[in-house]
Length: 169
View (spheres, one colour):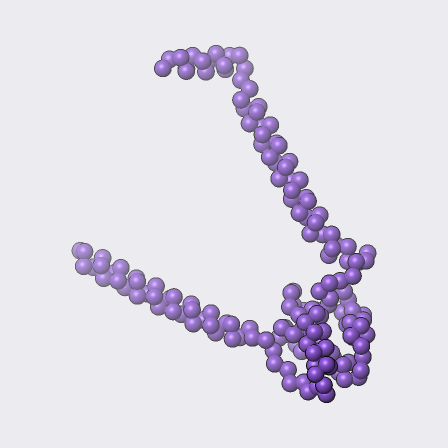
């Protein structure tokens, strides 16, 4: 009896070890799949190359939720990096490139969108949500304390019954 239980437990340990090894190996495989994209752009000077890297990190991929152009593997990010490279080769300034991207893809392409009527929700939305949550918590706590206070108020008859029960000890 005990031998079969011991063998089952030993087999369970081996299965768990195997599952752990598979999990670790798959995690290593996933990290290599999410590696940054490799572009083979050739620049005429280091200043233009550094501008490319700075701009590709400042501009957000329109498809991805929170990745910049430098880190995204999406097709649109690849196209935008090519556009960025071509605009730099044409001699456009950083502001002209940013204006072009905003004109084409909207303020979403910027990590720091300007404060204007269309972006109020981006700037003030989190504050409003946090304040609303805080007010909700305060409201619930006050309501709960009022309910507890009402539970403690006993009628005269209930108080007499309670005293009788407590005095019977």
